[in-house]
Image (cartoon, rainbow, N blue to C red; front, side):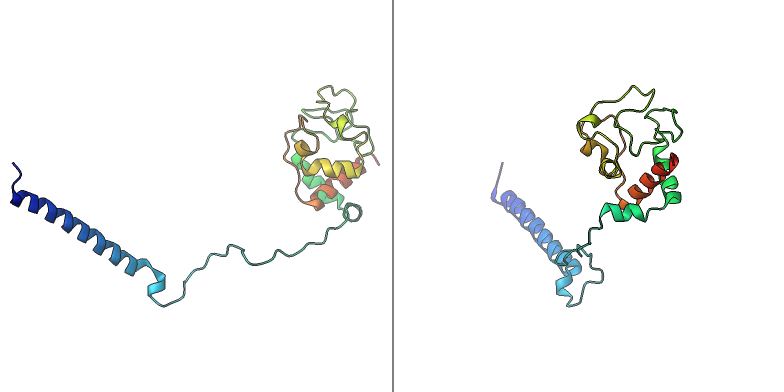
Length: 169
């Protein structure tokens, strides 16, 4: 069944396939390897490694709040208006925010769907408490029913707080 000639043909075909594979690898390396061309890469992707991140001076929130723009706060409040109303007593999915600055936590008249998580972290909605809450509501008060991700920019938070504070004079 297997004679010497059949075995030689099988061994020769494996050697030929291996030779084609090695020649293909050599050709691909010569074609695509940039180190063998002696040139510089035409496009370098900056990964940021090796460059120190510039230090940003942390400005106190009171200074940012002092320079807040109420008009910009009204624009940013549009994100909040999906669940909150700015009119007194007009509850929606969330409680109304008229007069929220300086108001006791969980005390909006007529709103009964509080989760109770806010009472554990604050007593009164001071500008500082609102700032911390608006950074990441679920991180500030775990268990809160507020599904908003937060406002990452300190200027946006200050503008919204100034706008909310201006609603009730």
